[in-house]
Image 1 (cartoon, rainbow, N blue to C red):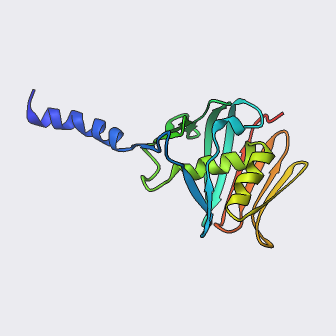
Image 2 (image 1 turned 90 degrees about the vertical axis):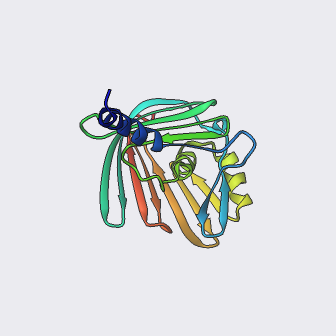
Image 3 (image 1 turned 180 degrees about the vertical axis):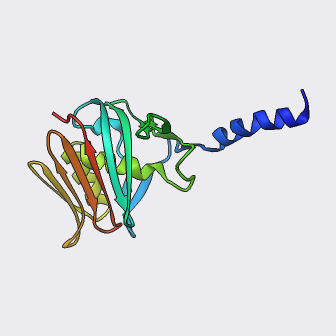
Length: 187
């Protein structure tokens, strides 16, 4: 086989391998900054309210841009797995969180995207209120949960608001200027 053919065959493989990322170990704490100085440590999968194994339609907005995805989400007390697809069904990314390790691969999203933030938002929406409250208090935030609404405050300032219904979950991050709407069967 000629050198050109080998190089042509290796390019897609290298692109795929360079798009894969794994962060964390079972020993290190994975965290995100919910505010500039509020370090939220990710909770283990055991904190989920109830298992999910479902299709979701995601619409997101950030910086006056709109984004639309389809996802298959499987989450239980052992792991979180999210597969993202565009509207034509083409794979856009895979994320898994298990045993304190995050694996994220995507041929579309920039390498600078930290999957820890996706997991943190997921936890804020779908984890039990008690461990969330404790984790948020540790980083200096106030967590308020009432029926179908969750709010996170820094002092008196509303940082994040989440509204849940049986068919949609809406997360608005006031501080960072983005929002998600997840549509699915959340009964």
